[in-house]
Image 1 (cartoon, rainbow, N blue to C red):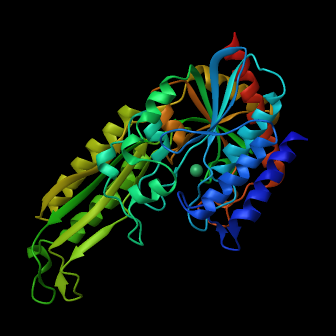
Image 2 (image 1 turned 90 degrees about the vertical axis):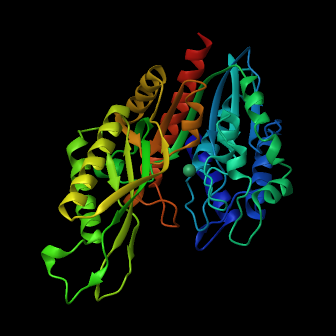
Image 3 (image 1 turned 120 degrees about the horizontal axis):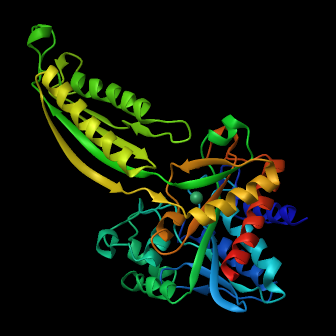
Amino acid sequence: MIARRVIDDLRELARRTGTADGAQRLAWGPVWREAREWFRGRVGELGLGIETDSAGNNWVTVPGASTRTVIVGGHLDSVPNGGWLDGCLGVMAALEAVRMHAGAAPPVTLKLVDWADEEGARFGRSLLGSSAAAGSLKIDEVRALQDRQGTRLVDALAENGVALDRMLDAHRELKAVDARAYLELHIEQGPVLESLNKPTGVVLGTFGVERHMIRFTGQAAHSGSTPIPMRRDAFLAAAQTALECREIARRHSQPGAGVVCTVGVVNVEPKIVTAVPGVCEISLDQRALDAGVLAAMLRDAHEASARAARENNVAVEWRDLWRIEPRLFDPKLLALCEEAVREETGDATRLPSGPLHDAAEMVPHMPVVMMFAYSSNGLSHCKEEDTPEPYLETTIRAFLRLVEKTVAHVAS
Ligand SMILES: [Zn+2]
């Protein structure tokens, strides 16, 4: 039973590299290295080796009759106190795909990749290895990064045989591969499949993100002596904007194409119970799968903040934090993924991915698709993260079907 073997590997990895608090495979650290050593042994049992690229990503190759290549990926690194499936479900399912083909040359070349530092949990930069391979990493933007202990990223990398200034060579190395498809299985990390009671989902793409700080400036004043109509309360303008952003998300959401807006940070000054807030800064994080919808949501938020500023007699200023465009997956691979999920579960739920994944970095370079497994209680990045085993087995079987379908498609 092949799905069983994948689950056994996952349980063993959790035993070796987790504690009662969850997975401890923080990228570039000793437990992560241990996980990779154990994985190297697993691969070795198949008579195969591991090659590490210039960004520290680990690759396993099953040469096929053709150089055309199907890549199957995931990541062994975890957040501190992480779940037993995030990232490594993709790697262990990929290992099973490799096992199925290791004996005899498949019609096309099959590659497994274990991306380095997907989580960015230690240095704050997610998708580090995959963005280097994609050529999108800006080396100078990460050069000064340090972890909480003051260890520099450049030193942590060196400890693992990776030279920061050579990381982008991984892009050249990937371009030398005749890559025709990238597949990734991941736990959903959210409540959508659970709410539909579906074990498996077809992922349409990863959300585009607009991330900004909005700063309202009014006038701090005494809370006792300043009549309400005469106030310039920056917090009320921010609060009004935050409420309006919830309406913006409601307005732009359609069935099967949900969008989100989140105000996660509120800084208020002077932060005194007896003072009208003179300054209030909030963050805004907007996400949507459709670039046009995302742009409209941002326009609406701008208008809402201007209106709130006017109505509260305060000024408003925006500052960009970060943005990424939506990364849509390949229509042909989506169709194969849907077929695979339908054959295993009877139907195929499609959903977008709110979180980014390594797969998003591959989108500009090759056809990509992802499959999601059900998340119990929608939880991830914590020890409670889980997929019930029967659902996990179903999903792994569906994913291995997808690999086979993709191999056949790329071969033809
Ligand atoms: Zn992950």
